[in-house]
Length: 247
Image (cartoon, rainbow, N blue to C red; front, side, top):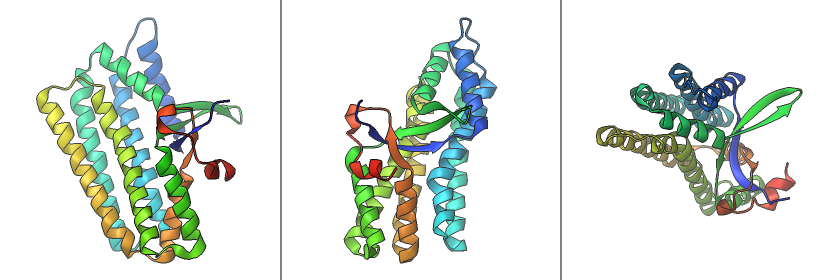
């Protein structure tokens, strides 16, 4: 058995799972008929569920103050609006090869399996093993009473930045890479992704030092909880034993 590499993973909704499967079936059939409307709906849900996983759910889990929650929700709306603006601009101009590339991307970031007699799917983004290990070790330290130790807190913030970079890469940058965008659209895409990343990293640096020790621990528990074993990918390294032991 191959050693398993670390992935950020979350369960796709049944609606997203079905939309993605419908789109892939249309692209990969003997007479390809990509359904652009299905693609747009799938991407809309994909972005919303990813934003929920990386931004909205951790905020709810931690129990942030209303003022902080307002900032979180503003960032979420900016992210969703920016992503779908790009999707809507390019979706109806895609070639058949673009659609095939999009279907291949969807296959790469999902893991399908049977659960209770139903086919379900997880969304997976690979993360480097050293950062998975740092996230695990930081969680252990925080649960051990070191949540407000400056060095431990700095490690936790660094881990959050890495998670957000991985999410941005697979939710925004990779989908844009597979399309042959013209210079104007590419410039717009780069600018949009850059704005979202900058706002997210700024929010992490602003909020994390201000939350309580209990909230810091809750954040560590949440984010370490979405890192788990995934398909073998040598370039990302082997998942730390601590994660496997906890599952």
